[in-house]
Image (cartoon, rainbow over all chains, first blue to last red; front, side):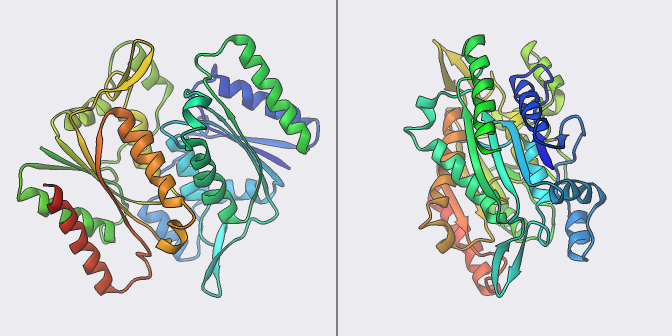
Length: 191
Length: 191
């Protein structure tokens, strides 16, 4: 199964168009589920109560549901805009809550090890910033390090691609059409 | 005025102790306000409705309240744990929503410029990871880049200190006491 985790508030956004294109490409290869975090009104706040439930060996119901989707998936595609050099809060909270100890990672012989070693990940980001702002300064490299390494590799997942689509608010319609085609091509390369 | 923005769900946490020590040190120098985002049940989800209000020149009421606290402050101290190489979602959403266009930054002659140029910032983070995990790998540098540069400098704010307190869950009580003293010393150096 393929899982798309999508976080953007506006159904008319370019992110929405990307998510639809990704779904279309994936559907030609197998079953696809989409978790649209805004549409789901996903609760992103990791609470004391969550900690208590997790520490006692339980899993809060809404977290268990998302973990089930991940368990069934071989490939996860995350589609979201970069806001303030990171994920929108609703997606950051999905990671904070769903990627819990015992599900995504655990301690083995005094070391933390990733548990999601059979999962592959593709990340697709839109940015308001330009490539010239982000690549020479090393910011793109830091986005890869904090996300690919710090989140997904940490859980044992393999990041196949991390696609950055720059200057989205200011490029032409034609360039955005090309970006969607690029997304399709990059997906087809690894499917 | 001094403003502490604090994000941790557990009142018995070490982050809570840090926040209390910071407040105590700042109170010896002036008026302090604390925004405890969990206690406030701050809504971190930037919505389509927020975008509409902001685009029409308005400001959602809960955002306006937080902006007022920032406007009145000369120094902001952020106290939070690093979760998944970033802020807890509730704080990420505070940035997503409160640091809005027209308040924190704006376009001038085709360039985005920071508007909070009279504000100073101190960031205090706890981490489960060790210094050995984060410094040689460049992850600490990336946390500075994404947060200090990507958020605060972008808005024109000056970051006085970014303090990383490593291995918090595994160090001794005495080491945590030393960490609190270090926080106090680092604050007193710049007050």
